[in-house]
Image 1 (cartoon, rainbow, N blue to C red):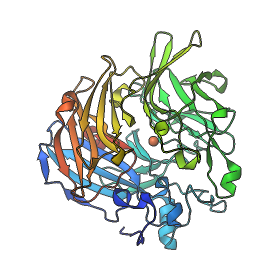
Image 2 (image 1 turned 90 degrees about the vertical axis):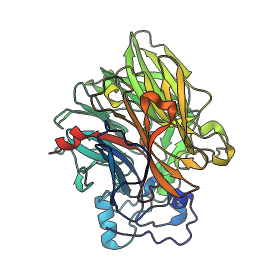
Image 3 (image 1 turned 90 degrees about the horizontal axis):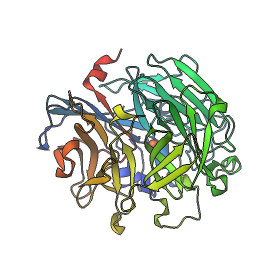
Length: 475
Ligand SMILES: [Fe+2]
């Protein structure tokens, strides 16, 4: 498929520079490498993002609206190949057939008459590999299955018809039980929160609805070995405004902020809610249990203006997230919360995924620039060592910006940080994209390999790693 967004002079940041979509699909060996690709790195580094084919209203286009495109760097025996493909969703297929955009997006009136949904399921946000399948995720609709390494779209999955509501872009996989723990939210109409557990064979074993005072935007969750953690934060749905084509979300501090903890296989009435300081969380780092406490780490900002939720927001640092911790005492109900870093803002936190739900030592985050000329851009990476309360940084250099990095374990590695931290970097000076590989156990030494990409890789959302064994396990 080779479609071009016909935009001459887009008056929209999300269609300019390295946010702009690409229209070529590549399959190419990566031969231009600074440094050396490690031999012990075998599998697929994946990064998904928004890459619109058609745009209905250029001024109203939001970054979250574009069609999903997956960029893959496949590592094998010290070599890398690059592939990128659109996720060929039902919505994109319908638009290609019509030859035009059929949905307006988050800043436009929902399309209440479209049989494929009020909004397009763009499958553009994140990916999860579970039960030997790769799923491309969008939090308003069903997951879309994609195969590796060809990135061919299989289609939407609904877990044998059991999935009736939305499915988050951020499910968690417990490597010890093989379960995928997930949820869906609806900001406008009940049920506001649905909670799912899918077993290692892909069977949905738990599917319950949980009451919330109001519909809220709930982007992520966390798990511990025995519990699931929900975030009821004050970005509420505004159906009235949405019906008029206004912002569907509202920064609503009167709603309060709460963290909910439910036993993994619990019932709706088993949720315990803990009041916490007003703030907003897009992404959690991890959860775990320690004594009587359930511990949650996340990147938290004091407020947010996501999709115009807070029109009164000023261009200050209130939207900047910092690493943060909550300790919720399940016996006494006490909450302790604190910043884990006050100096550097960060987002897109990741851990060694084998530690999901268990106490981790290391977290890897995209570092937010605090330089006025590049404010808000991700100008480096931070490795947090939680046991020693220290951090190490990788600086991408002037005019070089990245996004989410993942941790890929080294073949046969057993230590938590025995592996590689991988992300895409855009070099504004040379106008080239690189896949940057850092040895996680020698982090501040910087990249061991900078792999030049055969095409531009636009800024995007979330990344994933699928090992060579995972790729081979696909049915
Ligand atoms: Fe996300």
